[in-house]
Amino acid sequence: MFAAAKNAGALRAASRAMKAGPRTTTARFASSSAGSSSGSFESFLNSRLTLASASLAAVGTVAWYTHLYGTLPFVGEAHASAASDEGMHPIAYPWSHNGVLDTFDHASIRRGYQVYREVCAACHSLNRIAWRNLVGVSHTADEARAMAEEVEYTDGPNDQGEMFERPGKLADYMPPPYPNDEAARAGNGGALPPDLSLIVKARHGASDYIFSLLTGYIDPPAGVEIREGMNYNPFFPGGALSMGRVLFDGLVEYEDGTPATTSQMAKDVTTFLHWASEPEHDERKKYGIKAVIILSTLFCISIYVKRFKWIPIKTRKLVYEPPVNKGH
Amino acid sequence: MSLSNVFYNTIFKRNSTFVPAVFAGAFAWSIGFEIAVTKFHDSWNKGKQWKDIRDKYATVEE
Image 1 (tube, each protein chain N blue to C red):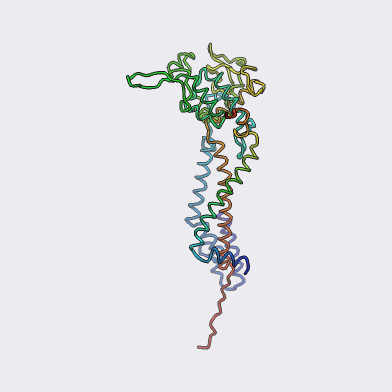
Image 2 (cartoon, rainbow over the protein chains, first blue to last red; image 1 turned 135 degrees about the horizontal axis):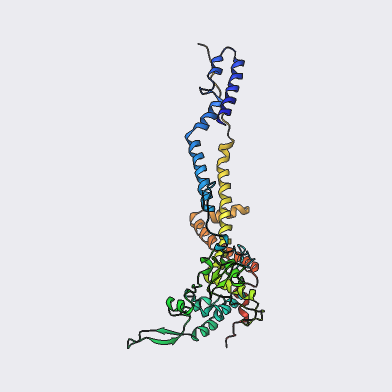
């Protein structure tokens, strides 16, 4: 590249020199001295800015690749693990809240809460969601208050310094199924059921993973042995997990008459858990619309103002009239 | 007197009218913008939001 450019420059310089006649020294040293047009191109190629930007581009590309794929490019790696140990990639499902403008389906959140309460809550806590969070999302204030009052909470101390039991209020958080993690482990064969408040954010694949896991239980394939009390699920990293399949057709009875199939319940509870992870989701997308409209308008205005201000400078013409030589 | 002259004389000519016009315009525009975006957002997500299904569960006040 470099040599080719230099040769071309030398050739041009040589042809110029031939037209000029006797000045052959220009052609002779064209490759080692600064010419006119080829010289500016060469000085561009050899400039520190070019060197710095080329280095930056190379380093940046490698860094980007490493960040994206986790390994350096063109460097081989040997893995001792099998792909199945990482768990299958979850299937991408067309969630009704996938689009950049789409809110959650709140009827689905309500059904999902029912599934969580009747099925998941037997083992999994949801300790970052309070009863008040359901108000205006999936339940009315009266419904949420009535549900909270069915649960007894320990409060206190009172005037005598004793703790006492009282019915729940809207401000109380969802009651955990076990008093502490040790009790949860003891009740589930040593495996701790994770808290579900942020589970959608906490797992690769998010909603798709949760749905795939809930509906993905199968018998272990030939050759795969799992321990007693474990269950096989190809979407779970490692394949074997303590939680068994819990969703079966007709397990819950929806109040709105939706048929409670396994996939319907999995979809609803996943939508509910996605809401629990991102309660700000709907409002965030609405602010997104506003931000895009306002910022793109401001951008267009700034382009217009720039052109408006620069147009006299860009279109002006400077005329040089050489002074008339009036003799020596 | 043309329309632009009316605008100039009533709003832009004096700072004492121009600054309040800017403030009032910003206030009115933000309300109108909010209403327009909300209307679009609600029509785009028709039937999905809580306010669309609330009537099924809310009991009438006695």
